[in-house]
Image 1 (tube, helix red, strand yellow):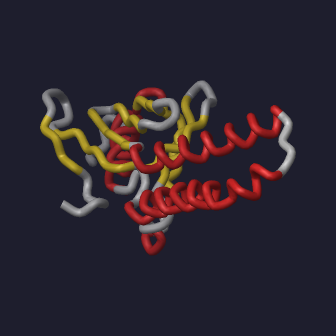
Image 2 (cartoon, rainbow, N blue to C red):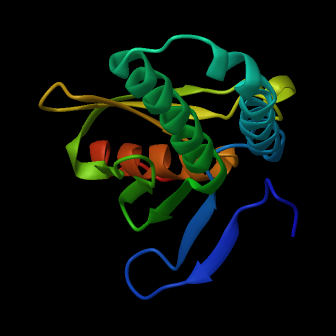
Amino acid sequence: MSATEAEHTVTQGEHPAALESPAYPPFVRILAVILVVDLIGFGIWSLPALSGASWSVGSIVLFGLAALCIAWMGFWIVNSRTRLDGDVLTQTWLWNKRENAADVAHLKLVHWRWLERIIAPRLLVRRRNGAVTWIHSADARLLTGFAERVAARSFPGAKP
């Protein structure tokens, strides 16, 4: 199965299959790993020059926190997953993003097919309470599946 293809798992209930895919395309995940490894390598290479400088406690803490944030974001870019199960769309991230089709007031799919290898398709979800969430998926079919479920709830008499 290709990396951009959704993985299908059988579930019980109203919708026969849950869809799951990485949140970001393979190229973006590989690039994140390369950048984090390069930054770590550059930091190690720079240690002799950095150790010769005079550092305050605050600057050391700031430098360490910046390195930690870069590694943490790289981890989540590589490991983030998006799952559509029934009427619920979930993306694992620093915090889990979860949207229910019944709570959606407005959707906007941002997807450039010719750039999907480097820019993940994303869905802008605006809830009825005004909250806005961006959900990414390497497989645009997963996002359009959620949009179809939102439309089916909005227009119950319409055929898909």
